[in-house]
Image (cartoon, rainbow, N blue to C red):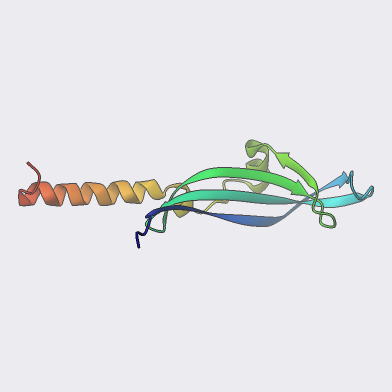
Length: 111
């Protein structure tokens, strides 16, 4: 059996940030919640980078809503809520590659 070291995963975060809007499905004024859905690519089960992100304002009753622009979503939250390891895991892999390359070069393994 061959294990593929490349994969992806995702997460959904809901925040305590609300905006009052008229819900087109419910037909009532509701406090829409801000939600973030994002996915990241991974290498050997360690996150490498975010591949997709989407901020949404969602009705708490019927789950309908709309997509919010990234800048608007991040300004409502005061920054990027995605953990550093999911956004910048490529830096860790680059560091690992540099250390291994330097070790190989020093031992004479790289010619």
